[in-house]
Image 1: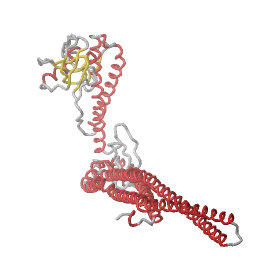
Image 2: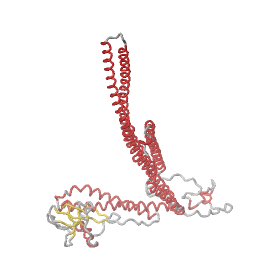
Image 3: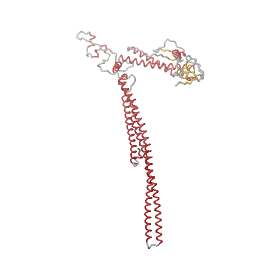
Image 4: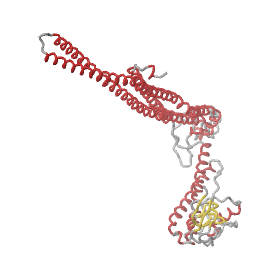
Amino acid sequence: MDWGTELWDQYDIIEKHTQSGLELVEKYVKFVKERTEIEQNYAKQLRNLSKKYNLKRSGKDEPDCRFSSYQSFLDVLNETNDYAGQRELIAENLMMNICIDLTKYLQELKQERKTYLMEAKRAQQSLESTYKQLDSSKKRFEREWREAERTAQYAEKTDQDINATKADVEKAKQQAHMRSHVAEECKNDYAAQLQKYNKEQNQFYFNDMPLIFNKLQDLDERRVRKLAQGYILFSDTEKHVMPIIGKCLEGITKAGTNVNERNDSMVVIEQNKSGFERPGDVEFEDYSQGINRASSESSLGTPKGPMELLGKNRSKNFWLFSKKSKPTVTEDFAHLPPEQRRKRLQQKLEEICRELQKEVDQSEALGKMKDVYEKNPQMGDPASLASQISQTSQNIERLSGELNKYETWLAEAGGRGETLRYKTLTFNNNGAHDVLSPDGAHSDESTPDPSQAIYAEFDDDFEDEELTTPIGKCTAMYSFPGASEGTISMQEGEVLAVVEEDKGDGWTRVRRNNGDEGYIPTSYVTVNLNK
């Protein structure tokens, strides 16, 4: 069943129905837009909420950071933030896949409907024009036929009149004949117009309008189908992010299960244990017995309070009952209880050792670079490194002094310093290496040869490591003699396998096909690493 057959005479109904359908699409688009705004505002509020309660940690030293309940709360906030991101994704997909798409499709439907209605209007106007011509020819035929009848009656009357002349009778007959002929022509014209109109009317009702109505029906069905897809997308858009939202919720559940109250209690003990011993019993002082003069002078006067009665613990704070004033922070952490002081000193030692190791590595790299510049002036000026070498040496000396100082304080606090293992090197003006002990004093070891000091690490690498898989190839742009220990010679245009890329010191480790390995200046070759 189609509209062209069943609703051939319901043009107004079809026009109204199709308009109502388009308005429904517009209404749905507005609904989804408002839903999108709700999702966006919800996501924004969730992000602000997460940001508001996401306490900024000052670092690993923050006391609360070690509590599982604190970490889990941060995990909850992070998962909430991720959940907000999924709500934003829902809003974005709703806007792109429904609002924008349906709005574009709606405009196309409106234009198509307008075209069909214009076709119907033109067909209606054409039929009305033909009908006007038919009506005009009909009225003319009617008028001319009446006139012909009147003239025919007048001619017959004149012919029967005995007083009328022959000329009058002849004239009346000619007039009647002429009018009869005109009336006959009008009749034929009316018949032709009627035939034309009936043909056009048949075309209008059985072909033109049914075709237009069927097109409008197809348009409306496509509109309904597209709208149904929009309804489904409204649901699918949220379904697609449900797995990720589920993971966010699982993350929050996991955060809850990760809370360990026993461990948190142990952290409280570890962070706040003072190391003090409990105060001993207060001794009884019998004033009824004779007291020597020296002791009586110190005992008379104001009665002793709890803090004075602690005897040997007098210098310690009475932790349970006294109101503790804010201690003065000192560099050796003497303001802290013994246990906490040892921990802080140990942490400080580890920090100094890490900084010292960085400076040592930097010092070694500068020494290698200086030695290479001296042997190959075209690669750089050794004097340009003097300020960096001097600054690095000063940093090593300063950090070594701090290391000794904190090790001494740690020993006083009753701790054992298990510091990071390191080696320090300083450079004299000639670029030679002097080995220093951890306390900064010169060791008894003799100064090694500069080239051996530079490439000792290279040789160790070759002895300790097995042949590694090449990571690329390089082509020599210049010849290199490879006279220094640990290096390898090469000729211009020679292709070598890259074993280890430049780590910032200006050298690349390569290997020949015969297995010879060594370092070459990175600036002398073109390197192509495997992807």
